[in-house]
Amino acid sequence: MFVAVLAFLLIVAGGLVTSNNAGLAVPDWPTSFGSFTKMPRMIGGVKFEHGHRMVAEFVGLLTIIAAVWTWLVDKRRWMRALTIGAVLGVIFQGVLGGLTVLNFLPPAISTAHGVVGQTMFCVLAAIAVFTSKSWMEEPAESISQKDAAPLIRHSWMLLGFLYLQLTLGAAFRHVWTKWGPTGSDHWPAKKIVHMFLYPHMLNSLLVIGLIAYLSVMALTKHQKIPHLRKPALWMLTLGIMQMMIGIFAYVVRVLQSVNDPQPTLLLVGVTVTHLGIGALILALTIIFTIQAYRHSTSPAQVLPFDGRKAATA
Image 1 (cartoon, helix red, strand yellow):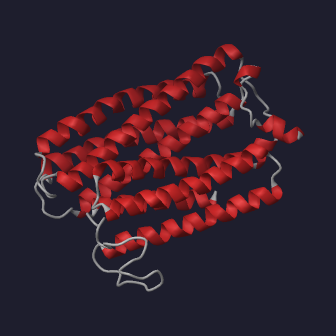
Image 2 (cartoon, one colour):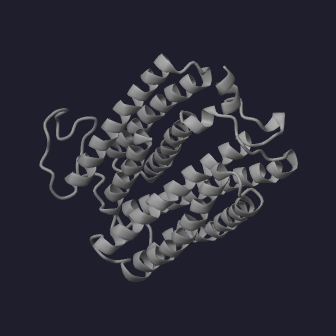
Image 3 (spheres, rainbow, N blue to C red):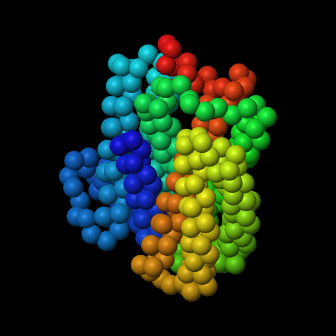
């Protein structure tokens, strides 16, 4: 749980880098101003970019420790493989971040960096679930195959639309930073908004609709299962907040601050908050999907790493 929380803070730190146009404040990688050990002066954009790197290194170190610890104490093969995958994912994420700097913030690589970063946060959150005490115990309540099938199907649909939402949002931010009105002036603001922001806004309607459907199902038909009820309630609450903040972000970014030479404090705050809530919704959806599988009574829908199997191993 500690590593997952730090990974979430790392996402927030990354959002601060992009929102403050600080991606090239430290122009080299893997060193910072030519050094691996010397702390640069944490002024201007350097405090965001170098601070982001410091948090990333700490998360990487803790992920390695978690993987080693898992291999020492956890006999579940899939769990060992998952932690090794987490280590490789964190390394890959670091390389993407380095390529972003070395290639002067190409939007495609920067977008991939943002998407992989949130994916790694979700992986670490899932590891926290799989190592929890409740996962090792037999579920007190279960769901029939008839009820579980639409729940699982719509959970996967929501995950797909969330990843589309994440990709469109990240692409908008990075294209805007690189080629927008305050960037290199390659693309007009209207083109960026039409290509990325409007599809992002339309897709959000599908996302909030699926969140509402799953939440109502969990809070009415499966209210006796806290492992479904709690994430569903948080998904619904954060989904409503996300819609409101998204509208506010559109007003601040496009209608008010489109030609501002520097990002305003309000714009940075709204954008980073929007990014952080989106990451939490994605993680909650993955946890909800895992628990929907786990509480299903259908053998075909039980995860290969179900807690019931782990408890009897």
